[in-house]
Image (cartoon, rainbow, N blue to C red; front, side, top):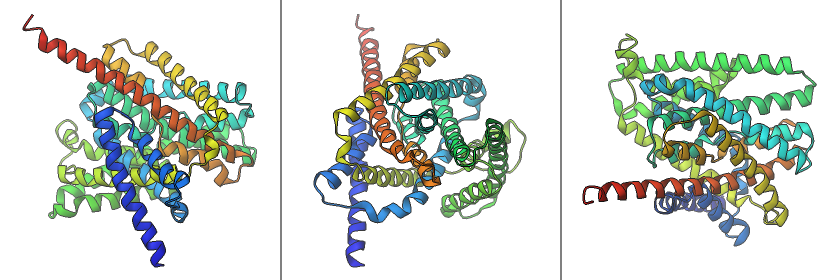
Length: 406
């Protein structure tokens, strides 16, 4: 037991330090911290053999959804009602179209270039079609972005994860039971309606509770408990717990607007201190998950065939994204560049890619390494895109500073 505890503590400590290095690399070089975490995990695991994270594997089916719930809640908190009201219609259109375009492009590559069967290709496309909220939200917190870009990207990643989750589980169930498209559509609609309704009512009730809690030092711990209860209740009733978490956060984060504009009395939101606690928990979960994922990487991924598959899949994602942004956004160039370049995948991608195999769908184990290639490639592409955005912003600032002297 002592040996296992020492290994666990070493892994957790190394993951936290790796998370700090990843944040530092992002701030200095605009290299995605997910790439840094994966690289450190690979170095500690397969490359040097210093650690083995197999002891953590049984906990991943709990840790991964927990991370998604908390960061979806964070995404809801980040959305300001005034910005949602102003940019919401465009954000919703962008979210649905970008997800659909990515799924379609990946499906074509998976069937034509990689030789997957239509259903397996559709499962892969649905699993990796959404940007990763656990990557997007922390990145948005560290870059300069217009209100429109923040609303569009936050809505896209939250809704995209929901669409992917429902699509993957629905398609996998169809393959196991032989159900039809009608069953899939009805299940999707029911999960969306229940998730949104329970999330809204739960968020409203908890905002009222926060108003009456006298001791605020435990406000975040209590809020986390209420969030998890709302998620579990939503799932038990057949709704989307992930959507419920997003809407729960949206309501709690906009308690002030509900009081002022909606006339709902006695509501309160989370304090800045509580938000700091949440940021630390998200940091810990991301660090642990991606270092673990890096340790689970096999050397078989480091082959020319894998490189070709990564280029093909990520190339399809990039092409689809460029097309969607060009069609739907006609505003300033800086926002357009950020919308185009922000395409990271993350925890949800890997969880969903492993879901069909966990449900017992034959032949879907091969989707997991392909999804991992997409995560790596899409995060590299995001790093390149963010580097371009930062360089453009730096040049614009330099020109603005030089203009008065001219």
